[in-house]
Image (cartoon, rainbow, N blue to C red):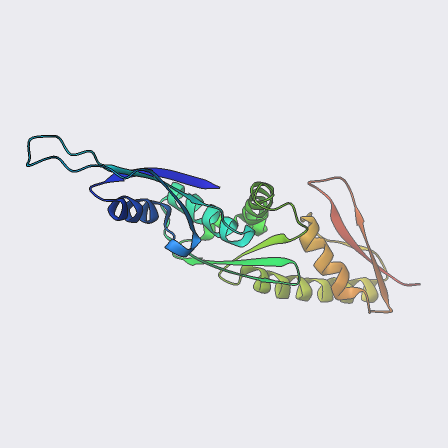
Amino acid sequence: MREVEKTGRTVEEAVEAALEELGITRDKAEIEVLDEGARGFLGLLKTREARVRVTWRPSKGEFAADFIRQVGDFLEIPLKVVWQEKDGIINVDIDGEGLGILIGRRGQTLAALQYLTNAASRRIAGDGSRVVLDVQGYKNKRGESLERLAARAAERAIRYGREVSLDPMPATDRRIVHMALKDNPRVKTHSRGEEPYRKVVVAPVK
């Protein structure tokens, strides 16, 4: 929830100022008139401005998108953020210029940002919906890259008849590798090590 109090010459002027600061439209706002104000008599008495309190109670998706925009503002990076919810997943797509800083090495910064967004958005809705972030289609590209890496590892494991260990990677990446090879009858996979050095091992089936 976010709320602001604003004053203006009229109630309408105060409301418009509050909506602009919150960045929302009237249909998403709860408006409370704190003081309707008063006009001075023949210019002899001082005018009292109107004062309102406007509250925004966003959905989980709206909150997540707003949270990401605020991160962009803090980093002084203009972000275009769109979201949609399907089957309990809130997919948030982020676009803009110079967004490598939001991705980080092998997506580690993006994973951390996704964790923080989910933690913050639980205050808005305690339901089971989960927020998934992506930056300029990075996750699709990363997924395709990991699938190719998994295929090459499987080829080496079969050719040389020994285990092939991949570099340490986060759990989301390890899952992609496991899923990529789960239907290959000639290899099996498992994870080894402790976080953050846990890695996937591809072994030939003997």
